[in-house]
Length: 204
Image 1: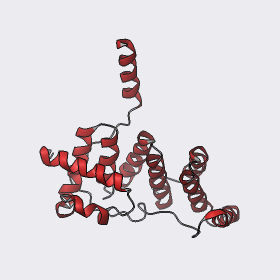
Image 2: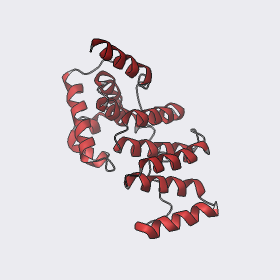
Image 3: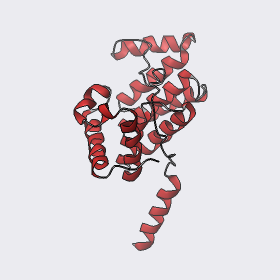
Image 4: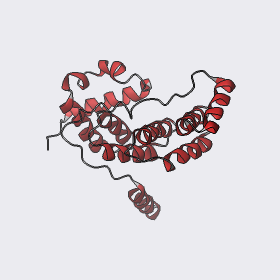
């Protein structure tokens, strides 16, 4: 039993995503990244067929493929969704607007599917490439907390507080600040806030 525990811990340490220490401030709204990708409005089969046509035409092929991937994840077809997202990731640069937005959306779909570690990997990739996006501190704090990396989560949440203290120190603001988040995720961030209040990390 002890050997199994040691081996499991070793495996986790090998595969755990390395997350850099947060910077002091994150003021860049980065609206080009933190946005849903919507080529075709609507729902159901008609929407999917319209997206397939957009994908085949080639004018907005990448965005249409990303929206199809999101629909697949929403329908529980995570393998198909991942395959479609990977096609778009392979055809985009992480520093480009489309490439960042696709990876950001991919990460959220992974996260909501319970694949927190791969989601964190994507978020770290684009946050590092872009510099100081304001979505990074609360988002990375959420993922790290879910992975039980609580000290790192609190450190990243501290960057959000340093940047906009009037916003992040009251969990009642989170529904307004994070409208695209599930309530359970906002509740998790409120737990991070509680841990930060109990022992605020010193910067740097």
